[in-house]
Image (cartoon, rainbow, N blue to C red):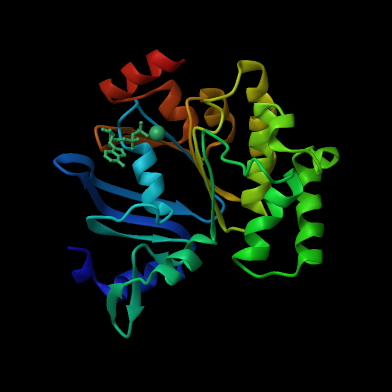
Length: 268
Ligand code: ADP
Ligand code: MG
């Protein structure tokens, strides 16, 4: 059980260059065992693509990383913090809501549906969390927001509302919004799945540029070309376990496990 995890070992993990260290993560919804013991390490600066069939637990795992779900068993450190718990002396105790919120500010998340605030302009969307949650100075945040809009190629849309933008543009705003919190880790959950095919490329380009800056990224995606080109590692999940993982080129071109082969045949 999580509470009995070795604090010394956990502490060592948080001090290394590991951005994520998940050890035997279990998660159930009622009697549905969704995560059945997931081990994963992601180093700072790594880009990892998480692939697998629908229902295999990819989103649940990402949500656990971002403190949006509680973990039933196992222990996970993300961006220097243990998920769900805090160190109290040499013991772990459950995190307060305020602590969970603080941990979350280090992690940016981008969803399939962009979830922009419809009544706010693009600039207001991007400035909201840093000014409200982190209470940073507006002038400082505005400057950073404009620089990020530049980075995602949407500087001229700052005063537009989300409904005036295409899906691809909205998703690029969502990425800029996440980055404005200056996270040390970015999680993407099928960021291009809801887009018309002709809009996928512009979002992938922004993600590629971001990967090249050295950002640590975990990307759930079916875009195998992106995985092949950008991922340091590809992790294949099925039925709540990691079936196989390896360097992108190797896993995609030469999968060993029959389930990986079958899945890749269905998406390539
Ligand atoms: P994936 O992202 O790989 O498609 P998910 O993590 O979304 O998989 O879902 C894995 C399983 O967990 C599915 O069986 C799904 O029905 C179930 N599940 C996900 N979220 C919830 C929830 N909030 N409540 C109950 N069951 C859930
Ligand atoms: Mg999902």
